[in-house]
Image (cartoon, rainbow, N blue to C red):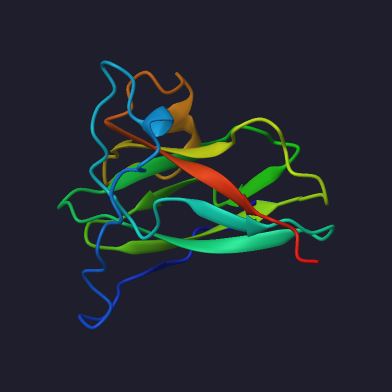
Length: 155
């Protein structure tokens, strides 16, 4: 079952939250030819505890532009992570709450994991976001990767 993205227009007390900016991890930098990310994220990394239970983190994604945008979030492992919503619209000046889940195990993954955020303009008449991504990510107008950090297990 697909859930609709919950969009809200923040009060002036909530905005603008400061864009956390690009990750300080050089491995997360945009590849040559990838466009700069135009949206705002409130974190530079996603931090999960290392436990035997699933855990989640809430993020905020804000569209400071004057255009309607579609975004897509991908992760390095569909077995370890889930994103809700993974694809949606975000209106000009609006903010979307995202939930990132980790299926976490008591073992820390050996691979470096990250979430990748992509966006592009969407016409006001577009009714569904997934078809706008049917040709893949090559026409994305902005890209940002943020690393996943697993906290050491508590003793």
